[in-house]
Image 1 (cartoon, one colour):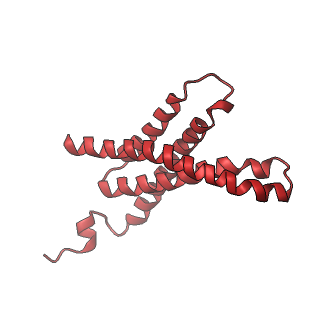
Image 2 (cartoon, one colour; image 1 turned 60 degrees about the vertical axis):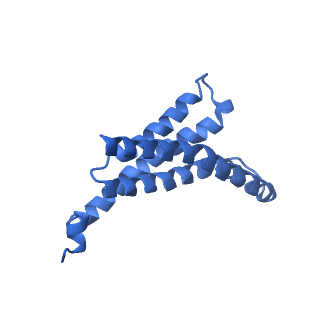
Length: 147
């Protein structure tokens, strides 16, 4: 029972930095796609094309599934899933409040609108994004464990 931490985790010390970098890249990629899909789902009344908003939830779910499928180990899968979740949540909030600085609002208008828009963004991120992204991610983990 004298196993070292690297033997237990299955990672070699030289490859750990590449593994972390790959996990960050995969997580940020899946998070950006899922975050933008959830943002557009919440703002579906602003879409120029008539597309069923449920399709956007499917894209968010597929991003959660891909967060698991793109990983080689469960440790990397958890890393990718968490990075994807936080980067997706940040994407939703950033996309929601970005018009305050893109449109020429006065500083007083920004101060009034920022708390309202930030609250709506966090609520949307929690209700829609968390349920669909983590639900699909955990379903993928459970299905792979069963198979």
